[in-house]
Amino acid sequence: MRMWIDSHCHLDAPDWSDAQRPVLRQQARAAGVDFCVYPAVERANWAHVRELAHACGDGYALGIHPLYVLQADDADLDALAQELQRCHADPRLLAVGEIGLDYFVPALCEPAARQRQWHFYTAQLELAQRFGLPVILHVRRSADLLLRGLRSLHVQRRAGAGGMGGARAVGGIAHAFNGSLQQAQAFMALGFCLGFGGACTFDAAQNLRRLAADLPAEALVLETDAPDMPPQWLYTPAAARASGASQAPNTPAELPRIGAVLAALRGLSPEALAASTSANVQRVLPRLAALRH
Image (cartoon, rainbow, N blue to C red; front, side):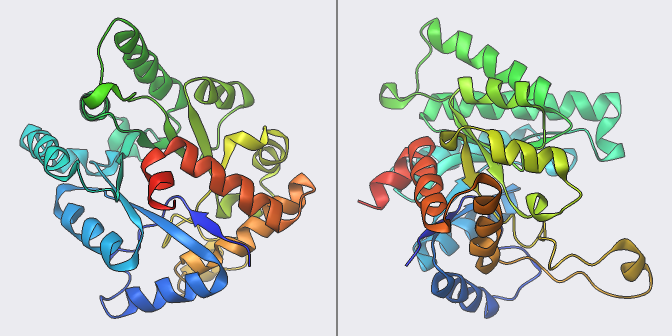
């Protein structure tokens, strides 16, 4: 049976009840999703993603998402440092994330909000470096600035700044990547894989599908971003939603079908894509590899 890894799934989201989550995870496992990574989005859900990962046999990341920085403060960054220290020995803690920059939401594009996002992003990169963890990046109209922050961290590391135990702090996953080939190559050069999910199943997403087809095999990981980023077969068009239809939530059980679309774009069997993308996740999230061996 094919074994897939969902490298980005918010199974803790309020779209589901506590009773529904284990059922959804079992459905995904029955479909062949062997492992899920649960990135946190704010301080309030750090404990939840950790508990969920332990209950389901999966992994988690701790961080402050750019959509939540306007309601966060430096005390949350201090708390994150303390939580990373406290959980550092937990093998299911895989990364710092979800962190990054979002220049799509209008309120986050105001100068003060951009500056605040940058502050939280660079502070969390420094925490990743301190604790020797990779990062899971939110990339939305922000690839070039994210790369600037990563290059700055890389320069610091070369100058002698090291993580706990000498582990490297750069690298990880650029989640929901939708940039250019040049940006993709820049992330790859810094030790990142690029996350592809439901967006590449849309026939109209020609540039993204071309990128998904042409990038080197070692660059790709799969994700659902459940309950968000629905694939084409789940998507409810805006006109239908305006008439009262609801958008069905995406779930991790959709990953194999998303993977089959990507495999077809690349001229591969689903088995081959499952093997390569799973190996890639384990390479960029080394603690996951240790969990699975």
